[in-house]
Length: 418
Image: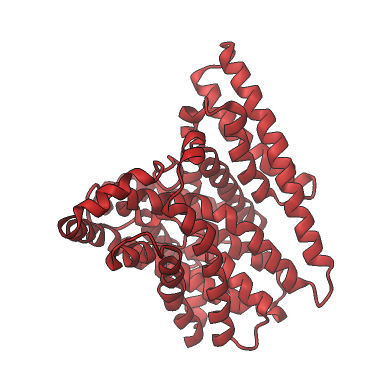
């Protein structure tokens, strides 16, 4: 109970001075991560428990499930039908290339680790989280097309990376047999079916009730939140991948309801945001603190640096060939790919699943340092770099940016824009 009290106290302390931190360009995840580092086992040791405890695992997984459903359900059907742009390239080309390059870099730095482990590291660090660089996607100095591209990418790539994470995790556990990865594939396929069927049904039922005046403003918001949790829990109970089920259900829910409940997604979005606050405290306490206390290898530090630069920026540049963007635009989009909540949850899943003799520490060290460095660097640079980039690109070539603004759909109102 003392851990819960401390957690609540830390989040409350941040909440009452959040405006001050915003003015200083210090993000909430950075403040909460440092607070967790101070009160956790690596600092004052006031928290009880560990990263492998059931309560920590449950909280982090529920937070990701809500966010996956919220992000997927916030995609505009009309925009998805008629618009394709930079975000499609980033998701369809950039994401797979990032996973592949991350796996290669991991194998070069940790040659004793299997390709399955390296693929796991590459895939769990591939999703981005625009909430860690919020000034980029909210700053009007940055052209709307660029903000939209970064925001849409971060809203959807965590769900797209999930099957890769579980595939490589199952492959690492397979011990040269096909049982684990075949079972993982079955779980993903089952989750897709569950998400489609249940999401469509819940979306249609909710829209039917709204059309007949059977709901209230609050109950509509509650229905969106509960739909996501229901699909996640049902997927787990039926032996499928709960994250994939929640993600697919988000799209299906929007289709089933024909987008009529999009204005009522606020509660779902805010629930994901607020639970993420607790996750960042736990990350600092139970992942970052113990690693800093025990020491890390130079390979892990180098991988973290490469993950935020070369491993992210090269795939982005390759995926955007032919768009006509200036080099500084490619660098800007490539840099602002923060690693956030999805990577934290996937790391905890790996800790819960992998034995130590399968290079678990390699996964934990590389992932934790990359996430922590991202929280620090992306948080501190988002506002000044957004202003600098916006001024320079508009002054140099305003027509190119103005022409690109109409090619991308508006950013989803989910986790990326709390």
